[in-house]
Length: 326
Ligand code: SD4
Image (cartoon, rainbow, N blue to C red; front, side, top):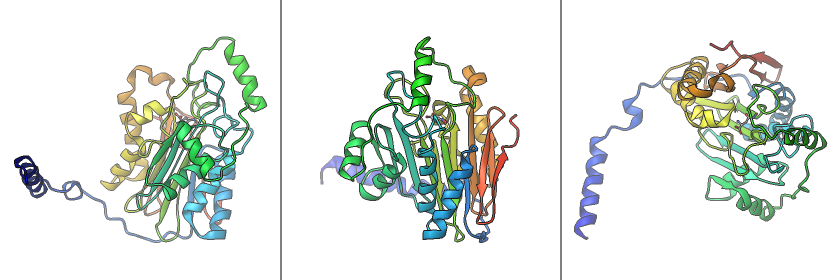
């Protein structure tokens, strides 16, 4: 063995002994592991109501929380009235609609696609990345090639009538300014838990309207737009992706819950952090978080007022206004 390799081996062994593992270093909450009754599904915004309904139906059929969160957001991916999710979403500056999506289960399995074109259900493509490749994320042309190889049909690349009209209007000035809460902030993020404490989540979007070609937001970034951990809970995000990526928003919330915060406290702390890291533009930024912990407690909070979410069980499906902003 060379001197260098001996040195590396020695120092690695040394550091293994010297550094305590994170789980010992941080305070940890002990969840009561109380069993919630049946599935609990949460989704961002009011399109979460039909999405949750579809998720619950799927859950009744297969009993799988992963199937539920995939099927639920597929409903939104097909919603022709939604201009922020799916191929009917508003395009980028070049007039091309590109999609981002991610999916994750509580054991750490995850998959995502970014900057993908012509695929009607990017969430299913993200699931295929998770289940059929050794990777976590595929982007752009590679994601499209993978879709073809997996038998996903490619859709004709044309804007929906609503998106075309909006794009034609936008081109008159070609000014990009994020608009709070309407039309360009409608990503669906869905998180859910079955009766055994198994968690899963999904997130899908066409991203910000009139973004630069190639821009990718938080939704396909594991830890930013979505994070799920069976030991703790799950979180998802909506809003201006850049502000969410800067703070690894969903991962931050799960880690705060691991240290003992309730989902509501964790969402509020994440919003505080987001504000502190995005001070310059904060008046024009909307970003919202939704979280659940293993005990079935729920939290939601956003930078600006107006954020709502849908919460469904086998017996109910309600739209809830997020607790008011700071
Ligand atoms: C993004 N978070 O791409 C997404 C946008 C969004 O509703 O939430 N749209 O930044």
